[in-house]
Image 1 (cartoon, one colour):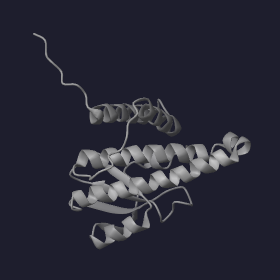
Image 2: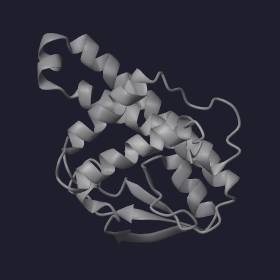
Image 3: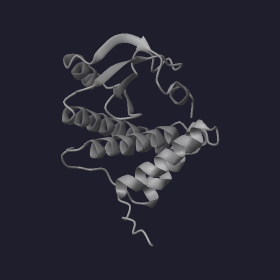
Length: 185
């Protein structure tokens, strides 16, 4: 008997690919840089786009977070590429500006997701990092109702909102994904 499979939707494709990359990273098969590049090229190949309208589901919110986060990381990585900076500094600066834009979009999407969840079963705290630039700035947001959902930000306006909602713990903790967070790319 043949079993008819439902066609994969954008969430299925996006998260299956992402999960595959996570397994490869955890196994040491790819570096953080390769993880970012592979994810970015996958997004480009499928011509994926973020949801522009209301974030009215967990899936839309987490998809937007991951979409914007990966594009921002890729742009940031390109803006710091030594060869690009030396040969084409104006292109590297453009990548830097794009990274800032996409990080802002990621933070906006994160806030909309947290609002959709009404900040329920959410905890946030600063994390221990090796980077001096991120020390006392980067914080982790854990969504306890969803397995392995760990978000990060350094947004001041979101930090204020997390504190206002009573979900920010004023202590420094080791990240739940410390190996990934503290690996340079």
